[in-house]
Image 1: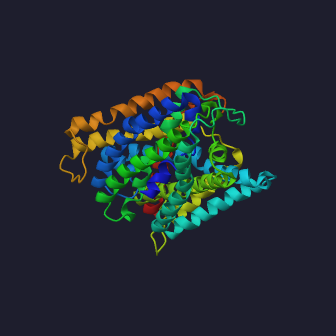
Image 2 (image 1 turned 60 degrees about the vertical axis):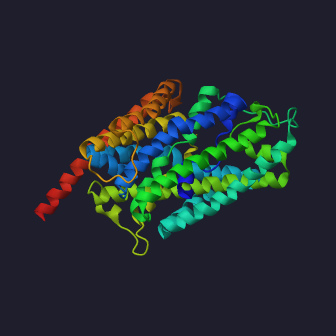
Image 3 (image 1 turned 90 degrees about the vertical axis):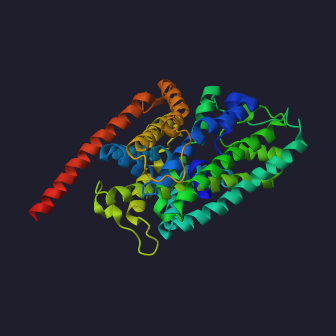
Length: 430
């Protein structure tokens, strides 16, 4: 549950622009409705597929079994492509929060060095095994949640006291539509925990329960602090990414502000740590299916951890640290959404192709129920794609950028097939 929490959320850090764009009332409504329309249908889908097919590689294995090698490869490609937009930002966020306490780290290349150190520590923890990562996630969750509990407790005692508070002018230009997209971004990633299925005790029972509890937990960690601060009458325009520390300072003391900054560092670290565990199982599963070179199937003897996949992926993310990626929410939703849509299709296809497959947890309503459960997430994805017309990435329309990434996956599969045939031919000749 804790690992799933960090693969999706990492706490209330990142939702500030939802309040800025929508105001308190609509922000709380968005944060309350988004998990119902977006997260719960996904949780139902993951619950059925993970209980029926608790395989290493998770969603990749589901799509491959339902629709074959080509679409299985595309599922893995889209997930790893989306990781490029996500993973490089977490060590950077760690450094940004650290600089709020010690500006010295912002000079020269010190921030890059700290970011590399975060990656190295997470690599070591992941190679140690899934239980180490999960235990670390539990403690990080407890520690980063404590300052928000203080905010929820203190805010009612400051009722209306911050209506005229002087705050730093914000630079955010997010509107209500942008706020909805950010909420979607903050509620996505529920399927990431499925990739470690063979390393989880009793996955058929554990996964559905963990995901359902995590949906409720993430929703509460978003809604309660925002609702509490709304009682102070602090202007919504004072909110922007990173403003939790300033709000804590207004509510409590410099000590609470420091705690929020440390919580932001733990959030960034915990999300990167948990997602390394998730993404590294994709190359492992693909190598076991002979869709990647066998070297990616190498695991440690003690914990069975795919150390080659971890090192290769971590190296790629480390090379991206100096590029200064922004959080490209629209593109991230577009690419991730394409992979999620394949999972919903796999859910329906497997119901039709393999009706007798044991499913300890089932989406209610039979086959029509499996179709309906994907309707609302698909409509929200369509909205995000339409919205992509107004965003620019690398000088091009972000919708076309997303399409380019998807098409590149088709080309990558063709290259992979050619390389596999070449390896098979050389083996036969040998």
